[in-house]
Amino acid sequence: MSSANAPRDPAQKKGPFAFWTERPLYVRIVVGLVVGVGLGLVLGPDAKTLDVPARLVLRLLGALAPALILVAVIQALLKADIRGGMAVRLVGLLALNTLVAIGIGLAVANVIRPGEGASLARPDRAPAVRGDVLTQILDNVPDSLVKPFVDNKVIGVVMLAIVFGIAMRRQEGHLRRTAEDLTALAFDCLIVVLHWVIALVPFAVMGKVASILGTSGFAPFVALGKFVLAVLVALALQATWYLVRIRIGSWVRPLHLLRGTRDALVMAFSTASSTATMPVTFETLKDNVGLRERSASMGALVGANFNNDGTALYEAMSALFIAQLIGVELSLWQQVLVIITSVVASVGAAGIPEAGLVTMTLVFTAVGLPTEYIALLLTVDWFLDRCRTAINVMGDMNVSCLLDGKTKQEPEAPPPEQPAVPAPTSSPEGS
Ligand code: ASP
Image (cartoon, rainbow, N blue to C red; front, side):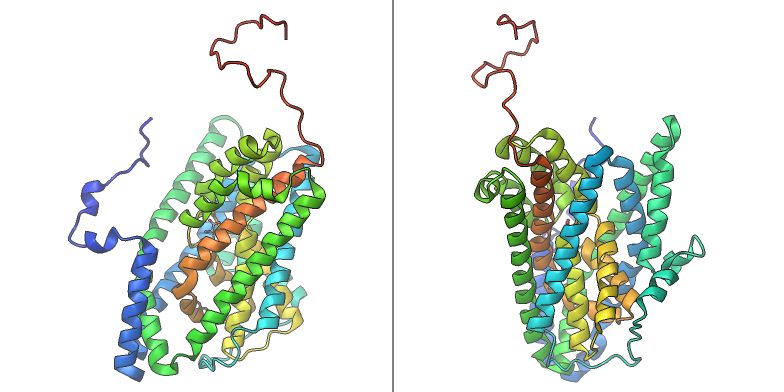
């Protein structure tokens, strides 16, 4: 069972660039940032051309996004074990949490207005942010199976993913297994390629920081600092929402939850991957908090595949931030469009590091914002990714607790003191 995914290439890693590639990504990004500041100060406006790697990275992320969303949603649908009334409740809880997250994100971004006053140059072509939401939605219903991928239309891609995911679920026997294997293969390959692109991010950060500093000075970075603060405030509000809901709607007490699941939360922050954290989330909910296995698995294993509130909040805030930065006022309707696409994009965001950054390109495309400014966010995304991942995981915990209801499960029949004897022989005490 030594899987093909086992640590594969210790020898490969020891290449001439091992001193660089073996550093954690955030260290490489910070180095890129520092070098970028130096280059920007030295070169001034001449640093403008250094933003080529950032443009390249964004193109590549944009190219990977539709395929990643397609495969992630299909895979989640294939793996999901959802039945009956609990499924309906689950969907309701997920939808409410995501809408609250985006509402909080937009409200905080509208109040703090982190992007205002940074006077970043508008792009050459005026951003075509269209306001007719209904037409936008109808436009997104695919009239071709490939067009949503060509046009990078996130809503259309998710629609296709859901339809084909359900169709694949209906297959049986070897066809079903083939569908699962092929999806898993496609997902793994996409992640490998995504890692290659992510490896370029430190260089993109270096070039983008130099180019912005050289041409616009420090003002955009002050704005970026405000943006980071705004996102942290919004994520904290979202965490508060979860805990209040848990206190009101379940038997679990918030402090008990935080204490019991701290391993999962710390792991989410340190790995920036809610998928990697999933087993720990499940175990801690079940063993430390004491949720019923079914509720723990519904929230932590099923919900985790669709539930990325932190990501949704971040995508909505980023769109507003960049619009403020380039002096574009998004109308209420346009913000509604941001909401819809952020919900959809967060459903499609796989629980892996930087997935939100990938799907963000689709949110920007949908509302007509220029994706090149996402490059500015590369500088802080490594940190905000960790924070929003912790909130994504907390969202799964919230759903599990609410599904568990207001009464704690009765302790199981075997008394806790019973020695852990392996053989399940008939109980001498007669049950
Ligand atoms: N890293 C996040 C997660 O694993 C997804 C994202 O990039 O927003 O949940």
